[in-house]
Length: 71
Image (cartoon, rainbow, N blue to C red):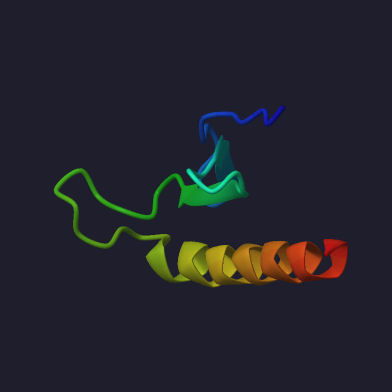
């Protein structure tokens, strides 16, 4: 089971994950990262864009490293 939450605090990375089976029987885990305040209401970069983007890249790299170690 994968539990996720909506981003309530500004400037913090939140993760949404899903797990599914492929037609070949493999398991696929999709990770979606988000950060409240990253974008303005018009879709342009928000005040926290740079901070959020750096944090998201770091979290995704750690997730990929964890997956590689679990194999």
